[in-house]
Length: 427
Ligand SMILES: CC(=O)N[C@H]1[C@@H](OP(=O)(O)OP(=O)(O)OC[C@H]2O[C@@H](n3ccc(=O)[nH]c3=O)[C@H](O)[C@@H]2O)O[C@H](CO)[C@@H](O)[C@@H]1O
Ligand SMILES: C=C(OP(=O)(O)O)C(=O)O
Image 1 (cartoon, rainbow, N blue to C red):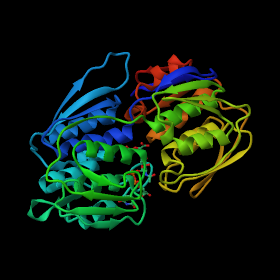
Image 2: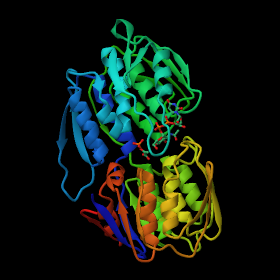
Image 3: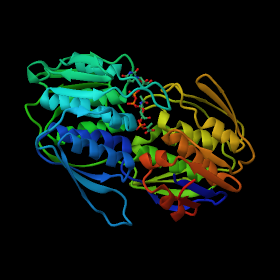
Image 4: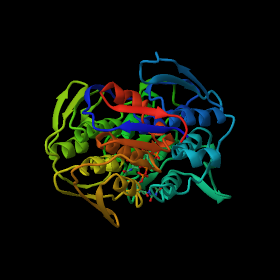
């Protein structure tokens, strides 16, 4: 298995391009199942999860064609054509490895009135149930049957009828599934307490480009008037606000200064205001955000929450940054019950962190020291990269397949702005 080797201590400086958003890409790709015409997605990040989702779509009968960009460019364009579907099943083997596979449930049900999808089960960051996906789909007309670890969803008469559903808690994935399914229902659906994440806005805009009728985009109430059919479209995946936030933390933790290009600062409100509270200097330019490290870095009190709150996907990276702050920070994770897998690894590098239940107290230390570390999820892995960039000596991060799921060509981007970082085979 490959590892990332970092010799820490270099201040990062320069321009760093931000890729298309993984979490948008993985909800835009299944939209292709809603039409028999091609969906062309540009600015798709080159990530293991995007490739994996492409294979899942192939298994369902869709063709995928990737247009190569030059090797020195980021992102690529994929044409997905689900002219006819040959399967309505997402098998355990795929769903287990890539949780986003659950997002074929809504589109398959909307298009053909039938889907059989493996239940994903838990993962390293927590329990991650899908009961709300199922309740929302039921509310718009699906009938559900559970057997042998799978959910089989059917639309009586082959078509969902639409309906009203109020989410008891905000769910990004369940909002995505129900919006996609409702876009082909015979009637109108009203979804209340819907997630408002920028990735949901991106999904709704893509569906509208495909002919869907959605009112209230970006608000907590979405009204979807079902259409008889959707058509193909060409759509550009939004910039990755989490990747951008991660590299902003990289500038801050190394005492450096970066211009993050190709970002939409409007989607990054909570991250940018947390960085500003830590003393990071932020300058907005059209299409880019410049961040410069303060001296010293101030401690923070942060609680994760659905958008527009502070994103759970940024918690681990901020924690790494705050290990070197001038004082004690308090982080509270409210979305996932087990999203502190990076804590013992950061502690091995000299961080002082005490976790009690959902809260972590991070006392700033004078320095981190390089060590061999590994993480069991994506953002936790990124927090170790950040710690390694600032640490004295060499850090080896193993199990980097997590990083390959979510950060396009990480070591190339970081080396180009001055990091001493490389990928090593084996280990
Ligand atoms: C609101 C939120 O921050 N969502 C994050 C969540 O999205 P993801 O879609 O994975 O998770 P949800 O938004 O659905 O989960 C939000 C909360 O609802 C609970 N839940 C969810 C679905 C369900 O059927 N039943 C249920 O109880 C979850 O356990 C969690 O506590 O993880 C992604 C990957 O880290 C992030 O990009 C999203 O920003
Ligand atoms: C946990 C994440 O993704 P996934 O839901 O794909 O595991 C993430 O993006 O931080």
